Image (cartoon, rainbow, N blue to C red; front, side):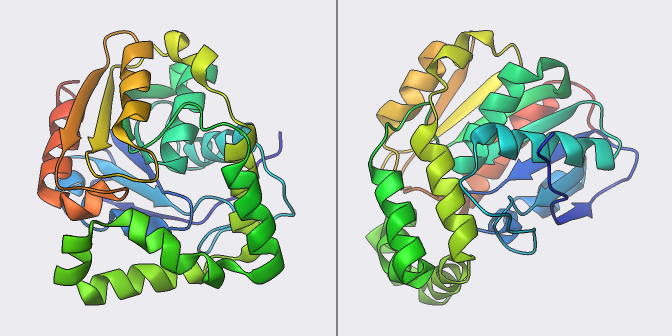
Length: 259
């Protein structure tokens, strides 16, 4: 077991069903701030920083996706959750897919936002090398342009500046190690093995992982439901906060065990 003890925050009733929210590459758990208050009215909400991000440990890379899944399993054990509803965006969605395929008993319902089952080697490996050489600050301006549409960046300059600082503040080794996990990942064979009821969310304007990536996931997971939001780029949970929060509540509440 390669797990590290990740840093996490809890909100909501201690005896409610658990929802775990997993962050994107270059973000901390704070990216879920728009969703937590509404979810915490009905669920015990666990947000955490993926290894190499935020307040979590930064082991030497490269990491594998299974390393990130091991961390999440250890977190579920730590909070006493035999099963959880899991939502992840981008890297967090990749972690959620692998968890649901590898440890099906641990995932009740799954939500996959702006993510991919297969990116292919190259782009993320190149980014890992750049970040190791020059630091996360060098990629932050380009990443923020993929996270939000031009209109949103114009309307919300303060929020966008905070998020760009979040990217630039991500430890170089942590960011690079997670890039290498994405570079080596191929979850396409896993999709048919996912039995948790799954919601897939696309940002129509996402240049990082465009909607065809989510369509492929929805086509591959039996019975998956696909929702596309517009306007919305890579961090659609922020740009379309009400729509995405409502979709997550609707998906998790269908299980019938909310408070």
